Length: 114
Length: 115
Image 1 (cartoon, chains in turn yellow, blue):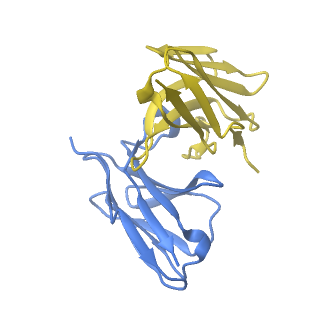
Image 2: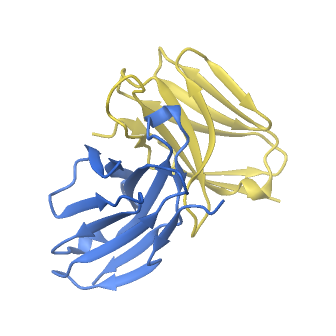
């Protein structure tokens, strides 16, 4: 059972426009969420995170929104740049448990066209 | 500071063989986690080691095992390889491995192909 779902395998946007990547989760024990970016032939790199006590976290061009009631989060990239083209993974964790693992979604391939 | 390194980067094995993958964490990091990435399943957690002890394990069969040495380097072993084990195996390290409370730093992965 996929506890973290990224229902869009791919997304294509024009340079300068907004990219919105979505993620849904089913486990109500998750209280911390992260986004990782992965380029081909490299490991994922941490991008941005959000705690369940917040509904928004912003870091430069990247903003993550969390809607706890809907168990949904989204990553906004504004403005999108060609260098943002990568696979984006959403991840979740129960930070209060002894379960030290991240549960990842399957990823969304973002392509930003010049 | 050097990043997480994984060796080998690429590996081809045949069904029934066994394989050992190695991960060297960032200096000072004591937690090492292993993940399997496949196109159909995304990134799936295998296990996490901290101070030479396995702290947590994902839902993988016993053919998948690991260990951690006193210098925090970690190895994972897959015995009796199956075609479905073909994947990118990623290692991630962090200082204490406290899940979300720390950033995990990933290595480039070992791509395993089972023929």
